[in-house]
Image (cartoon, rainbow, N blue to C red):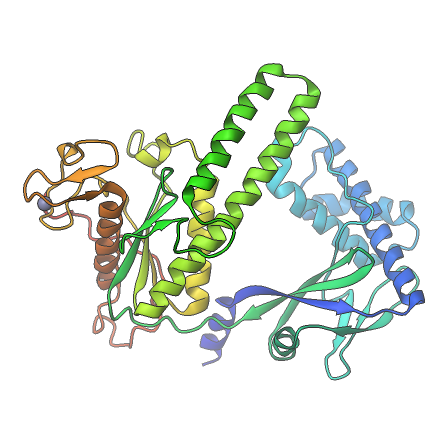
Length: 409
Ligand SMILES: [Zn+2]
């Protein structure tokens, strides 16, 4: 039983709640000092790491712990340890693309771990380390966030000063809900460029199905094409000012895609939940090199956007208890979901599908999504035989491949 509890805990889902701190003026000064000291320490450690090509925690600790404590007045032992871990975490993702040491902004958010703070949830206060000693600061928040904070295991927190307001963003561990049996089968989602996502129900996304500022995919495409021309112009220029603008544009496009991916995945999960279905997506890992020039590889949209879409959908599905399956992407655009015929000739024109054997015709992405849905159902059934283990199939969130053979080939 103990084992099962700890296993359940490991499978919890991280989520973030935001609290508003209400420090006294003196406490606010102490928090400001903590922010400044921690960022100064991180920047110092970052430079040491960069100069010495030292990017693992134990090595960087040996190299930087005493120097940083000597260098940055008021930095405690635990804050120094935290700064080292933070630098290692920062370089873990971006070292390859950086051409100089990472600099931490003096007023940027700083992380607090369990040793740097302690909670008094009954009194709604949190005791936080600062260079001038601990301060016990009251907090407020939205009722649902306070409820989550009271009930769930708490992780690390980020202290942020935003326009004079002190915020604490706390990671909490949500229990993973039991995945429900997809009684009405699977919804498939085809990812592409012309349409970022098309469901097996025939909804093209982003499209009218999504509320909010980004509705028609036409808008996203227009923006992307305009950016593309702008990029080419700037690349031809090649000046350092042009490069700066290019970087800013890349960031803006990334944020737009992230927003779109959140909206699409939210819609897909809500629809699957409402209709008692699971969700199937194409597994894009390992495509490179296996199937030469897979259709998603040929598309110009960055792979990160597809990977992000998968990650968002997987996370939101898990949170909602919706079954999620990744399926083999081979031939999803050439196979007929009715008769199983697989042929290049099934694609007479761009965006069109017409089966040469049974005559089924339709929008190519929609047909692909139906194939993905069918593979999702097959994959699910293959790993969730109700009597295979003698246990009720409670753990069904594992991704799975469909059976190796594709019928009709
Ligand atoms: Zn057919």
